[in-house]
Structure formats: structure tokens, C-alpha cells
Length: 69
Ligand SMILES: [Zn+2]
Image (tube, rainbow, N blue to C red; front, side, top):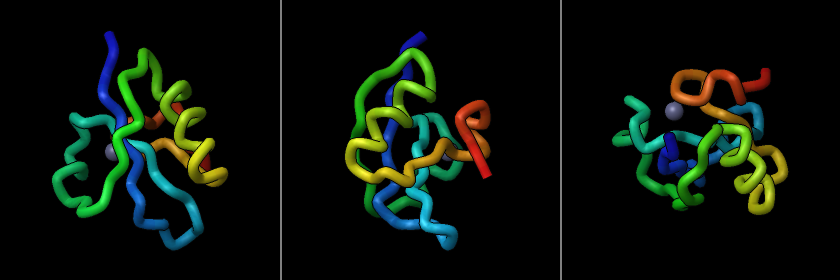
């Protein structure tokens, strides 16, 4: 099932930019996001995000399979 994914424009402390699904519980807390599109998997969303920020990373909570430390 496709989900809508967003990129948090606020850099994390480690330099990562996190990719979140619209269903993420942290999504309402973000004040600046870029809509990436609808994707079947978080890895597709992260790939799209890396065109904007090379250090994009999946959210630990909503995109855990795509989260790297
Ligand atoms: Zn998330």
C-alpha cells in the first residue's frame, strides 16, 4: 500500500534529514516539511529524499527498516 512521505527540512543533530510517513506520530511536531510523494516502501522515499539532501535517513519510528545509525 502506498503511503505519503515527507522530508523534515530541519537537520538532526547528527546531520541527517529524516524521512517520515504522514502517519508518523512525530509528523505533527514538524514545522517545515517537503512532500516527497507516495511510495510503496520507505526505501523508495529515502532515495527520493537523497536527491535533495544526500544525508537523508528513514525515521526510526515510522520508517524503521530504512533507518540507519
Ligand atoms: Zn517518523
